[in-house]
Image (cartoon, rainbow, N blue to C red; front, side, top):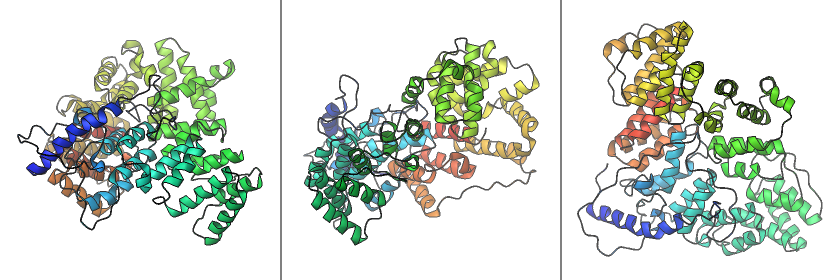
Length: 598
C-alpha cells in the first residue's frame, strides 16, 4: 500500500466507523418479502428485481480485503463527512478498503470512473467493478478551483448502467438529495419512469430542473405537458426542440407527436432505448422493435426483459443478455426457462431442434429437457450437449450459470467419468475449486482410452493454477497430451500457461521455457493503450489499490480475455497481487486460462 499520513488514516478509520452506523441499518432494510429496495429513497417499488450479488457466472468468491488495522492514534473531532466517501461495503464485506484511493488524484478519478464498462466478459472483473463502486473509502480531496462533480453520483450512475438496481437503491440512501446533483436527479427521474410512476418523474424533473441536463429537461417537459393534458404547450415545445437541432432522436419526436395527436405510432428502429422512450411508448400504446436488444445498457436490458412493449422472444433475449452482463442472476434466467411451455414432442426432440436453431427459446427447451431426465447419466449427457452448442454460439459462460443448480445433484464417479472433464472446467469457472478437483481426479482415475487420458491430462493447468503449484507429474502428461491433440499450438499454449504461473509468483525453469523456442510462432493480440498501461504500472507499484483495480478493469473489462494476450494478462495479474488482491488475481488467471483454451 502507498504511504498514508496519520491524519488521513485517522480520518479513514473515523469514516469507516461513522458509516458503519449510518449505512448499516439501510443495508439491512430488505423487505420481508425479499423484494429489492427502490432505486430512490422513497417507498416506491424498485424498477426490477434485484439480482444476486455474485454475478455473472455465479458464484464469484469475494475475499475480504485486509483491514487497514488499528493505526494506534486518537481521532479528534471529525470533519463533516464527504458523501463521495460513502459506500455500503466495508473491508469485512468485500470492500476494497477505506484508504483505497490514497494517493489517487481526484481529476484522474473523475476522468476514469465514467469509462467503466456496463457489461463484462470476466466474472472476476465484474465483481471487482461492483466492489470498487460500492466500497466505503476516503475520496480524493477536491482541488480549490476544481470541478464540483459528484463522485458518488458517478459511482451510482455506473451501478445503474450495470443494472444493479438493488445496489443503486442502497447508495441513493446515503447520497445527497437528487435535486442537488444532475446525475442523481436523472437517475431518480429515470427510475420513476421505469416503474410507470410518471407523476413522480415529473415531480422529480421539476425539483431537479436547475441541475438536469437542458435537453433532457426539455424532453421531460414535453412529456409531462402531454400527461397534464396540455397538448398545445407540448407541441410548441417539441417544435422548438426539433427546430433547434440539438436533439437527434426521431423516435422521441415521433412518440411526442403521436401523444399530442392521440394516435398510435409505429417505431421501426430503436437501438438505444432510454427510460423516457419506454415510458412514452407505454403512454402511446406503441410496440418496440427487436433492435432494442442492441442497447449497451444492462439496466435497459433488465427493463426490456419484463416489458410488454416487446415480443416474448425479445423479452427472453433481453433477459439472457442481461444475465451475460451480470444484471440478472442466472438463477432468475433458469426460472424463466422453466416457465416456458413446450409440447412433449418438442421436449423429446430438444437436441435436434436446438441444433437447427439455437435460439433463446430453444435454449430454454434444452434446459427443460435436461431437467426432466432423472438418471445422472442422462442428465449429464443433456447438459454436455447444451454446453457444446453454447460453446459454439459464444454463450458457454451463460449456460454454465444456468445449469449450476443441476450440477449440484451430480456426483463424481465412474458412471460420469466421461463427463468429468467438462464438469471440472465448469466448476473452475464457477470458482468452486474443491469440487472441480474431485471431478478432475475422476477424469484421470477412470480414463481408459488414449483420447480419454489426453482430455483428462489437459486439465493440468487449471488444477495447478488453483492449487498454486506447477510442480508434479501432471506437467509432462499435459505436454504430451497437447502434442497429440494439436501439435501446432502446443508451444503457444504452453507459453501462455507458463506466463500465468509466473504472474502468480511461481518460477518456471529455464529448461521449460527454452523448449518452446523452436516453434517460431507469433500470435497477434490486441495492444492496450500505452497511456493506460503506464498509469496502471505506476498505480500498482505505488500500492494504490483503487486506482490499480479501476485501470485493470478499463484495460481488460470491456472485451474478451481471449483477445488480451499472455503478456498483458500477466502484467494485470501481477499488478493485482501487488495491491493485495491475491485471490482475485488467481481467479482471473484461471478465467484467462479457460478463455485461452487451456
